[in-house]
Image (cartoon, rainbow, N blue to C red; front, side, top):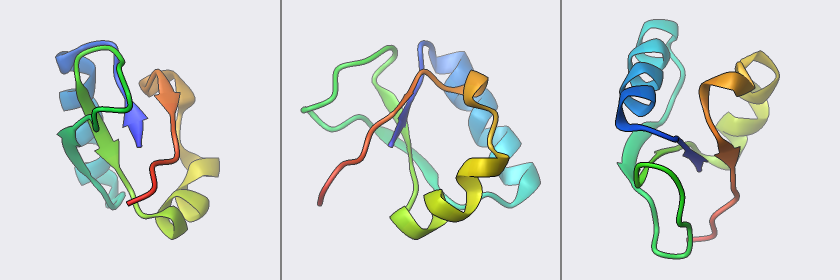
Length: 68
């Protein structure tokens, strides 16, 4: 789960991911995470491992593992 400081950053991230074919989607942050605008980008763990080296960490505020 990636969190964002603002809705604009979350929407920009979503657009960039769609353009690059990065899997995931914007969702409301789970209750155990309180950050920024309340939106997060959810990726499966295996997708995170594959894409993390190619993602720009400046685009999001934090990465937090969330168990479901």
